[in-house]
Length: 271
Image 1 (spheres, rainbow, N blue to C red):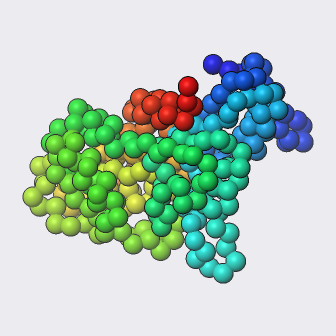
Image 2 (image 1 turned 90 degrees about the vertical axis):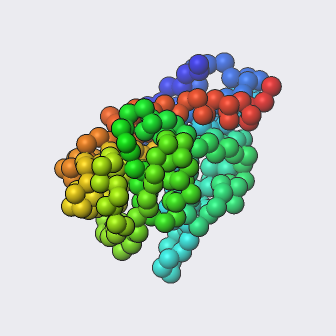
Image 3 (image 1 turned 180 degrees about the vertical axis):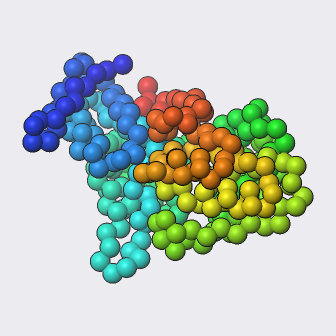
């Protein structure tokens, strides 16, 4: 385990110093990238410092990878930040490991990241948690695009699944349509999603499930971003439990992704 000293000067600039012997060694930086703007420059400085002191290679483990949302120019003049961020990060690290990046129109990290990368998937861990902790679950996906992922979780959990129809008009304006839930009335609905930021999709889904006479839903999420008041608003919507993986440190963490990361890191670090 190496050590970095990181602090800020009074004007807000970053001070960084490597406290461990680096020469000739492979350096693995671990930094999950929620709230990424304040973390990116320290990563750049750490990579440069490691190389300046003779590091053989410098890799980044970012369990949550930011800047995946804006992957096209929706309005004239918009920055396509996913591509810009990918180029900047690729220029500074020799390899990258992450968990379930929030891909949309980009189908794989290799489309925008030029550095070697590995993506690991938390679905089996979510399924295992559901199987142990939720009696008679029905797994519910947020939209039709999630069906393959949700079907995999449900299969591994030994549960049925349904998917919602979602229409998004803005960052906090989401409409969710439930299918007929009559045959699942005795089941515990388990809302699963790869990321919760504003929480509007899960809040809307939870309210509709309760309105349809279903039991209080359990929410299981990979990346617990939970911007602003999202967590308290989701709890107020009537859910019974909120569970997340530890890709982002959060009070809802209950599923450890470390066993997924270690083999992927080993493939890229090399001998």
